[in-house]
Length: 438
Image (cartoon, rainbow, N blue to C red; front, top):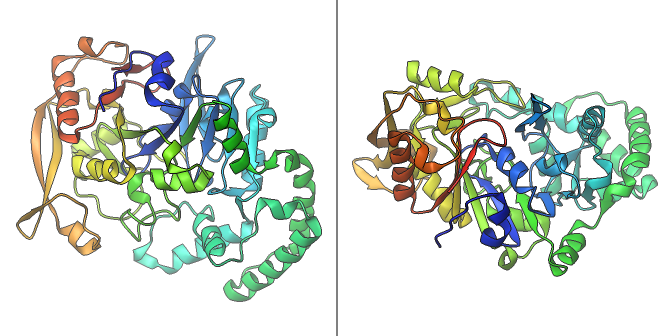
């Protein structure tokens, strides 16, 4: 399907009533910026998976000054008035972090409480989950996964093990306290950690007074909204290749980050999702351990990191950097049914004399078109590259694709040819306004 989008106002008519924004690489692709822009045209913005391990950065110009916002748990649409933001049933919620984000935005003049709903089926991350996450990561020694140590994995483990505690449980506080005490005693015995159980229960007793009005059946809410013709934007967290099923296991997150995960994580039937917009950096980055075939460990890699400010919004860790890997992005297109792409951070490539694109893999001398399930095989692949000429012009103020430097246009057109999906959005800077519609 060929889509042509000239401005933000055309988004809903071209992309549809329900859309999903998915990272196509290993996270950090720049999803937050496009979600923020699209939120102007969509009624509801919903997070479907993950928790405070996300770090969606948005930069806006306000009164001539640049303001930066980093969202870890809240949907990126909270900056806009008249929008409803949803934390879906597929998410895991650390309540202290949620309250801190809400309070921090309030101090900056943004009221969140009037435009936020939390699924009563979302599971809660407790402080013991964070302690367990750290213990388990340290026990792995030199085989660390590179988690954010936010308790995400242990919370999902409890969910799958049918011992998790959900937001709905807070509404029956006596029942909640009983479940919480039992879980704490089990965790202290298994991991040797200390928990002040009564202090924690008192914290949640105070917290529920603040957040009880936000806890609802969001599946029912979204279904009714869809019937009323309201538009819904599902916001992805992490990237396609951090998906627990189709990612580079075990170096993955603990949830489903593809479009299928968006449907289950919000209770939206797949047939209602009309478009999936894939976000891909103009190059590739990765945080933590795991295979990375196009990684650069030289001066060019350092140049990408510094020009792109490639340091984790959640952890502050330097990101590994490398050339664009078309196989990685094409695999994401296959799994999520992506029919539109936003290439971000094209401006970061300014100044490179030559730019490479990884267009294929060879394993044991044979060409392959999909990422191997075996990490040993994936670490062994040889990358086939093509070279593209670079450019030196500053492109951050350009609004029209035709006004980009000739070599920048050729780069985008080559990516589009390889990926076989239209590139409708091109990021040329960090701010909302620094985006080309095409």
